[in-house]
Length: 113
Image (cartoon, rainbow, N blue to C red; front, top):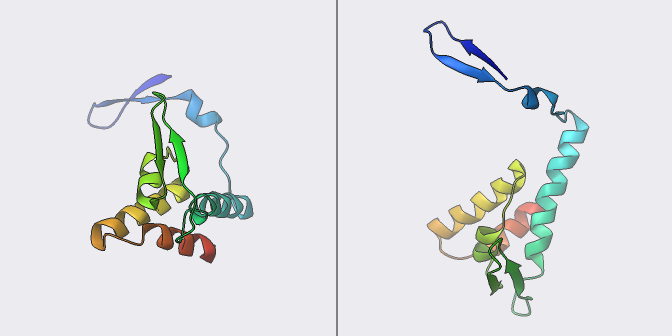
C-alpha cells in the first residue's frame, strides 16, 4: 500500500492486492457472465408455476427461510457476480412496478442468455 496525493493535495491509497487480480476479457468474460445469469435463472426455474418447489435458504446466522416466491429467494441470496446482481435488480424493479411476476421475468431473462 502506498500513499499518493492528487493535484489538490488530497491523499488516496493504492492497494497492491487489487493489482494482482486477474481480469477476464473477451469470450471468457462473456462465458462467465452467461454462466452467472443462467445459474440464477435455473435456481428460480424450479419454483415457477403451481407445482413449483419451495427453496430452503439458510443465512449466516443460521436462520432458515422457506419460500417459493422469487422476490424473497433473490432478496435472501448473497449474489456477488455483477451480471447475476443485475437479475436481482431486475426482479426488484418488477416487484416495485408491478408487484408480481418476479420469478417469470428472471427466468425469461435467463432464457434469453
